[in-house]
Length: 212
Image 1 (cartoon, rainbow, N blue to C red):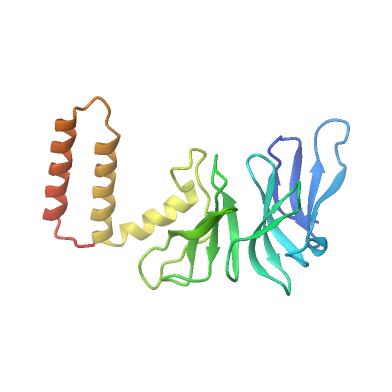
Image 2 (image 1 turned 60 degrees about the vertical axis):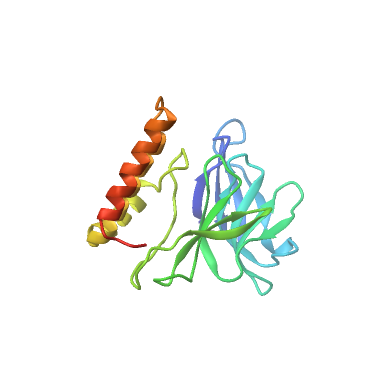
């Protein structure tokens, strides 16, 4: 049995958790079917307990895990070469994922407006708030990001879209943000033309009557 499977970056193996350890199962080549222990949390200083929900970094050099031990309970990153452990969350946290093409992670903490919030951080960079939707009934779970790092995945986007659709004021904010992004991404415009576009956007935003 195993849990939280994912493909290794080289595409030759599946990585999953079992019995508080992280396992690599070879699926290609002459070693197909062979298992090896990538990480045994009980033997690692800074963990000394079970590890769950493994997420291998895009370069295959680090392993992000949820730690369950008496020493620490939260998100940590382990350097697979040195076994150095970086603790990222101050307390209970889970549901982690790497940002594409980045050394940063996203994870969920039991804080925020609706009791959950998404944090962003990584080795050498402190955790910072990534998403905490307004409202006492807002909930953010299982963050996943598109391959270009710009968008939440389709399921997360659908949930966010449904939440926005129920709130007219938020719809206006989202639409104005989209328009501002379109203005900023336009190429071939002179400085004067860009300034005029930004001024027009500001005027429209003020007429909306929404104050943030």
